[in-house]
Length: 282
Image 1 (cartoon, rainbow, N blue to C red):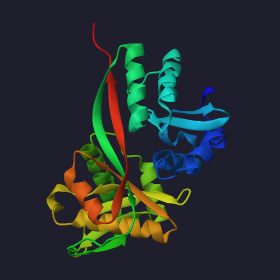
Image 2: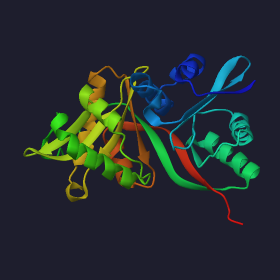
Image 3: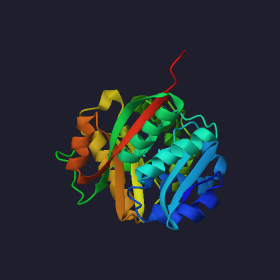
């Protein structure tokens, strides 16, 4: 019983892939990130670290850390989350935060702060939604959806950076991922009289699941229903591509987006917590 760590995506999938695919909705982040790495190579997100926790011969928890992002934890026993904090501390790992299933992330944070003396702060609470019965936006805004093409790339780079700023992570746009989505036809634009006013994209279908993300409307075009319309269009495209489950995340601090998603037929699955750690100065 305990944690096994690896930086090899194939080893991780061989050990923990069945556990993750057993609940593809809740494990949407891990599954889609791993699928992207399989498609584009292990260097896609920089340095990586994976881990799985076993008890009674079965995997009952997993995590992944990619690039500069904090570890993302699946649902797991609280004991496993606390043990992970000790394992990473023993390795001398630099851990700037944690995120994922609420109970697991908070148990990890409690153990990490006790072990290291760091302080934790919640930076975001998210809600995971799954699409139940799709409902078209009412009232339907002016315009129509279309699949983005290569000519839209400069605009999408600008909007992806805007989305990152609004989300508060300040991460640089991963151009490899953007190009992959464009080439696969997984970026949707909402246009009004030939002018793009909103975007959304959706992940590859993995274990029958796809996630809509990067829903973005520039400030000048907000409050006109374009975000809801492009979200509905992206979910429809994912289902048409074979996704039996379509999911997305919403920041619980944004009541507007949560309300829009519910009106589109998305239903809550579970809440997630994102925390950051800071070390007190002497």
